[in-house]
Length: 83
Image (cartoon, rainbow, N blue to C red; front, top):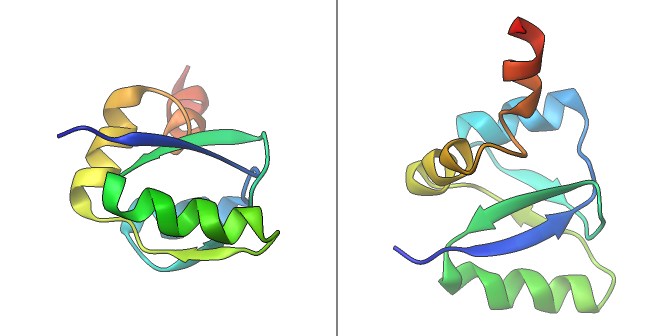
């Protein structure tokens, strides 16, 4: 599946935990981190960001796995803690 990349403000550790579990959380536009999402959600998220609004994101298992495979973003902190 073809995913799209979105730049978001670096979330707190608590929000990162929610994202990893697929729970709903608020994301804002920023340059702190990049996540990959389904193309169907891309337009909705970018429209909210264009209005300087936040978006409530609930990641699907496919999106969580795609972010894990990308090797950056959600799972950097976990990997960095073991090295």
